[in-house]
Length: 441
Image (cartoon, rainbow, N blue to C red; front, side, top):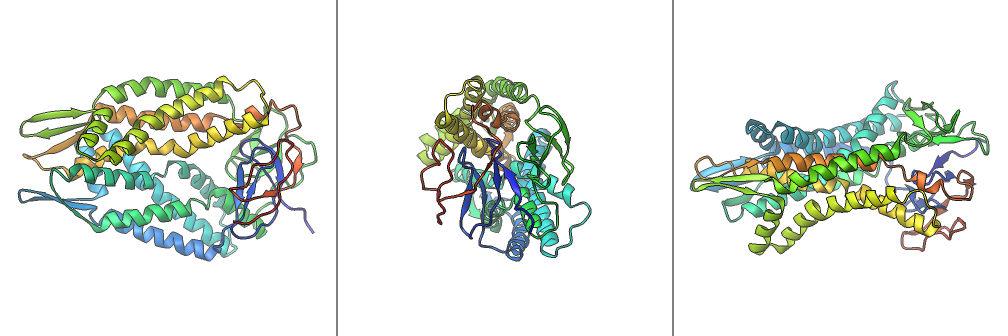
């Protein structure tokens, strides 16, 4: 009987033996509390059916209009492809391209690659290029921003309620359903698919041939644990071919470069107008803060709060949080403090894409309010700068390696540990790293 597979915590590098758990349970790291994996109640065939349904609804969302707007007998049927085309025609190719990638190409690619992989594993026939498809799926997942687009649609439509007569279209409801379905499908990550294939004996088991105490590294793309020749060395993953490093190379210098660049661009992103409203009486530029103030003045305090949090609070929080994490990285202050730093990094990862809200709103407004002679909305220089800030902060979070903070722990970091399966509301494991009991939720 073969030994169970190993997996390493992505945030502290503690090795664990991956054990079967019941549906609805989660497995947490016994050292830092990071959720290692979850056990879904859905089968592979059910996940495949969900992926097919998501693809069909996504097509409906992009074909049918999101809304129909009319002013004095002039009507506009706004769709996402139409909004991208209008933004491109207005001379803002970078904004249109970023929106096309994050709101259309990457979500569609995530759905299609996921369906392809699920089908291959369910039929127990992995194609020769399976590893390349999984690496692509792993790369697309952080950049798929369909839920952010849905929120941008709602904000744009509320902003136009006083300007034109608005009728909701089928595309709006399809985007809402697609967002929820893609969020659910996001739980089936590339690492989770590799574990499915591992359990079915279709790929090499993680940790195979790794001796106790031997230097190891975990592949960031597939989670495969293997030995490394030297602490600073790297080699291709035996399973998927991705380059494996024990720690991310030049983590802090790269993260600092992205943070500083984002901080510099954050100034023009807030000073320059993100959009310009053209009416018969003239052009009116709007910055991020002026848009928040306008929502508040019109009585939409909830939308004002959403835009303020997504466009002001979140970018500043990411920049400050990453700076704090990197400035205080050397000093070991105990496991409790390090767990708090790990939670702070998880927060930065979670909120990373929501700052793209303002860019999506501008692109959508350019299509929804395209009434020549009455009203037109075009993107401003602030939208380009703000989109660059969002992208740079995401790259900064990807460059930062939270495992380096745990390397200062005087205790041994790489020992095998029994798996912890616990309730999300249960207290975290004690500082000694003992595994809590098994509970269900």
